[in-house]
Image (cartoon, rainbow, N blue to C red; front, top):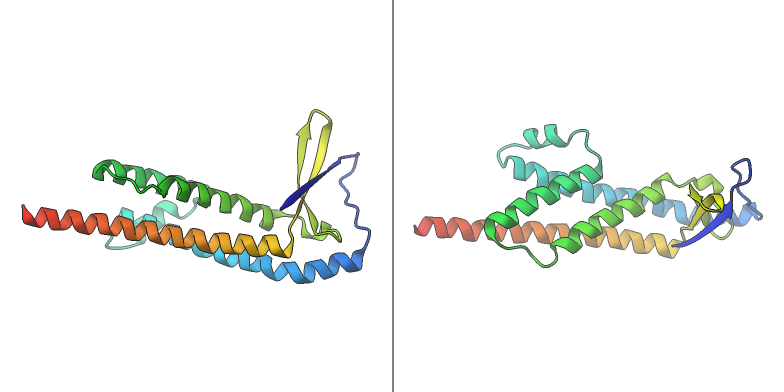
Length: 186
């Protein structure tokens, strides 16, 4: 996704020179925005399931009570803290764990940019207003170019992150099963 800024001058406005081309762009890209939301929600559901299972393997109720009003970033922090404790107890951490947490945080950031973008301000090149930024030169209007290609890559990245999370869960389950067998031998 490419970025472009424009100096803010008195009123927030957006220059769209070719309305028809902008509409055509939106027709192609908006279905992908829906897929970003759908696949990200699947990641969040996986994270919810993980947290609920860690809190209680008998029922999701205690975990759901804990996470019920948490934003994704708070859930990710809780996941990381539970996992760090697990790693300390077992004196092992998969090499991919730090990357997993970073990737989950990054796809959340990118998803938020997509979801909270002002799509009605999309121009003919696909640049969409995302926020105002303060700088030494004053206020700047920041635009991101959500191309069809970049949205498709984000969707693939979200799906891959969900697979990484599933892989981590499998690794954790193997650690627990090995630990359970060692305790049975004692």
